[in-house]
Image 1 (cartoon, rainbow, N blue to C red):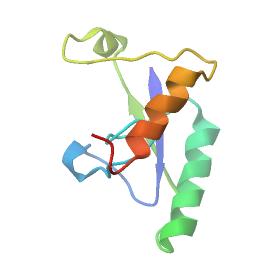
Image 2 (cartoon, helix red, strand yellow):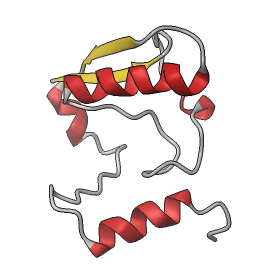
Image 3 (spheres, rainbow, N blue to C red):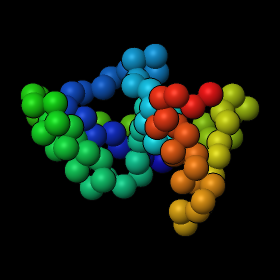
Image 4 (spheres, rainbow, N blue to C red):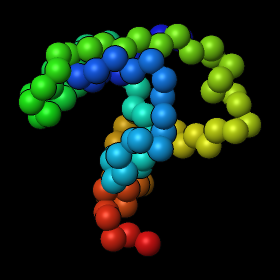
Length: 97
């Protein structure tokens, strides 16, 4: 599968410890299977940070990766729900314990 990451820099190696906390789905490296979404995020990142140029990072991931026993996957399907909203709210909350 092809996944995309929009940024203001090229990302050759994903280093999770450098990822910012308190994001919608917690600390992590965010990818999308929607190219235009990642392209728009790259433009937004340049605008917010004030430097660099929009970069679309493209990754080819083996489908078997999703079946790894090392991953914990929570599927909210495609319809936002109360469970999804609470999950996002709790991840953004710097004081949630």
